[in-house]
Image (cartoon, rainbow over the protein chains, first blue to last red):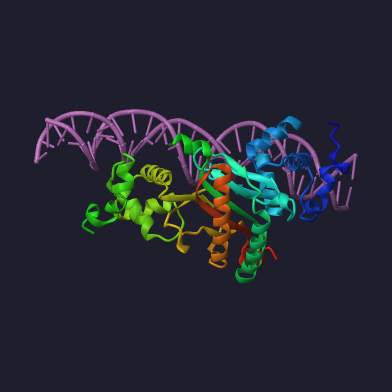
Length: 160
Length: 160
DNA sequence: TTCCTTATTGATAATCATTTTCAATAATAT
DNA sequence: ATATTATTGAAAATGATTATCAATAAGGAA
């Protein structure tokens, strides 16, 4: 409320990543990170803009886009797409089970389900694949998505 | 060359799917399908437009978009996204190994690699997951993607 | 075949998410 | 405190995709 994130809040938390890259730690950036940190779900740029706007009304949508681009480049945020024309963003949270991006997407209504079944097994295979691909193609892999597309129960029923 | 696709070419091939849905089999649709069928790679709408244009110069970009949307809805074409702001389209070719959508995407330069390593193992696990998810969530799953994001060899080198 | 109905087409304009531009502002180093 | 320069936000520009609408053509009926 009293605007001193720089002392012990999110501002401090990513201090190294920012200053190491020559980037400044600004209020808008701190609040965007705070919003991402407090949200579990895949947010669109506008979702983020609206949430930040409640805390910091002078924020501009442009700044949100720019900051997200920066954070993606820094590897702090993961950007992905469900095919509905708007990108989604999510804070990277290490390799634990809360950071996987495995979804079930309805191509008709756009509904998205984060599933957790087989996550352990999947992550094991994916990790193995990842290492092999990094070696073979010289990539530095930072993230992955596994998405299933189809019709959700409701849309399937509507279409008979 | 002599434009008689309706006799034994692609026009005939998807006759059932079209007429069954009440859709008409038109020249533009046949050529779009022909182009998709002859292309292995994930094409953007504009890629497809340009290829169709060489065969059928009066084609309009609008028709390409509309037809692709129709084909996606019919389940004949798979639409997906690499995060570069334009959708890609690919003809569905059954469940064989030529129809997987497993990619390695460079988030810096946009390079895309279709990899084939571990495909068998992956498909096995994915198929198992798919069936479980269909049962649990009532989805009718039609497709999936598995994508790894990161920096390609070249971009990694440039950034030190 | 010829005509009729209506889905489809293609040019154009409209949308919508994302980027670019640029003068004003604010975060750091000195 | 001050100078330097990254960052911001408003507004305009971009680029992919979608909606509009009169003209055309596919497929069924006569």
